[in-house]
Length: 419
Ligand code: HEM
Image (cartoon, rainbow, N blue to C red; front, top):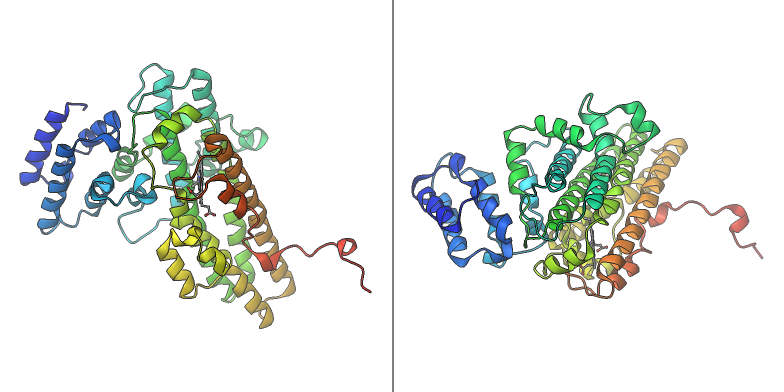
């Protein structure tokens, strides 16, 4: 699978002439990319890949409709095209289904696959047969810790979508004890052809260091979660306006739960070696999660961000989301207030929705604080790759609230005495 650049170029030249999407040499392209890093692919190879993309565009019928291959080539060629950014760095277009349907349980299944693949990759290093990227390998203790933390995030998802893979009783008693290898093997054995292709193609590190694999899989797991959160809150807004508005509470609570379950992803990422991160980060400049459309979409479904935030890099970095907000996006908070004032929401239902929103607020505050602490540890006083000052920016956003109008009523004794 891992030939020289020369043999890969020969293979691509042949493909450019008459290959079909089905026989595109994904394996060989990815093997080369992971061996040298996306930032260091040769100009000749990149030029050839661009010609393959042109050839694909020039074909008709089934071939031209191969959305996945077109997306793949765009992701590989992001730096070459001068379009490199956070979505292309994290290969987000390759995680999305190619059809219009989004099957139920997609978030859980995708996160399981991403983390099972990470477990597989880290186990190879533990067994002394590390795959590329393999620079600056962590020691066995750190690798073992990664497996345990990955399992913490996988267990709740496996309980929902993978029958029999984990024992609900032991997970409830002591989370994180399911053997990582067996769980990952069960997830990967269940993967279909498209899912395997997604896993193969979606780790495109910019450099050659082992820890970048972890970084990418953690970012992708969060992004998959943000997407689920945005879509669920969109549904919650619709339900609030419908026949049974109180049902929105369950949807909002499920968003809070999934974000809570995802928090150990930060502990997992904290096992990244700081020296490794400093090294590969030199080549990620221009890609920052401040460009995460998933996160900003989720945020702007809760309530409309203040104008100052909308005009700051927080939202100017995600122009499409900003535009959707300015065009007037319905939010949970505004809709909740509307249906209360119209008398459509009973007092118990209003309280249930508010309680669920408060749970989400609390877990999001924990998310921001943990993210802030991780950034302090990893970059200290260095600026961000998204052109902010870095840690001071993150500190400034901790005070923001998702639902400013749905805060708990202060206890009576804490209220200033009248008169
Ligand atoms: C090594 C770990 C990390 C470091 C050092 C870090 C650092 C930063 C910094 C400095 C910013 C400010 C924007 C910039 O200039 O880049 C930022 C923003 C952000 N990061 Fe991270 N980050 C890390 C991990 C993560 C992870 C795992 C996620 C999950 C997707 C994430 C999500 C975000 C989001 C959503 C923002 C935008 C926040 C806002 O605009 O309110 N970060 N990060």
